[in-house]
Amino acid sequence: MDVQKAADIQAMVEDIVVTLDKPYLNQYRLICMRSRGNKARAYARIWNLPDIWQKALDVGPYYIIEVLAEHFDSLSEDKKKQVLIHELLHIPKTFSGALLSHGHPSAPVNEKAVKVLWKEYLQKKGISPKKEGLARFFDFGED
Ligand SMILES: [Zn+2]
Image 1 (tube, rainbow, N blue to C red):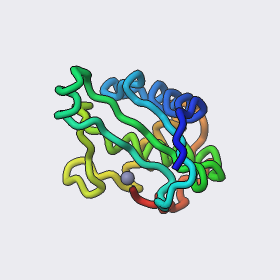
Image 2: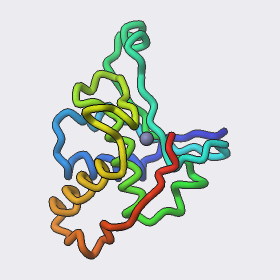
Image 3: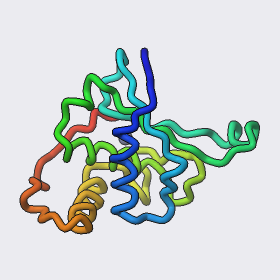
Image 4: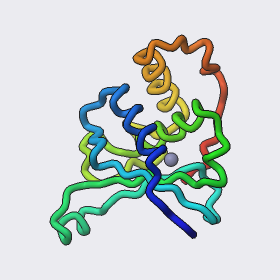
């Protein structure tokens, strides 16, 4: 597996974070990477830096969003952003370095949650949601 920093994905994530304006999401502690030759079937996945590593290294929390080139790169721009929003939803409001599971009781990471933020993203960008096919359903190829 080959993995590299992904400036294009970093720019997309920064755009999403800045547009959604969720103060708990620290764009400077989100690092985007692109991998190739990965056997996983997901479009993307998110990696956390566990508390024990944060303490051992004397660093705060960081997250890595990894896109899997073979699956992610051929998606439409909209779907790429929706996949990235899905990954961002795994980050708890505390930005502690932990991750929320898909079935988290108070903050589930699912299609409904993605749609809420996607709609918000489009509104803040001044794009009409109707034109963007909000009704489509997606399989994010869970991580
Ligand atoms: Zn997920």
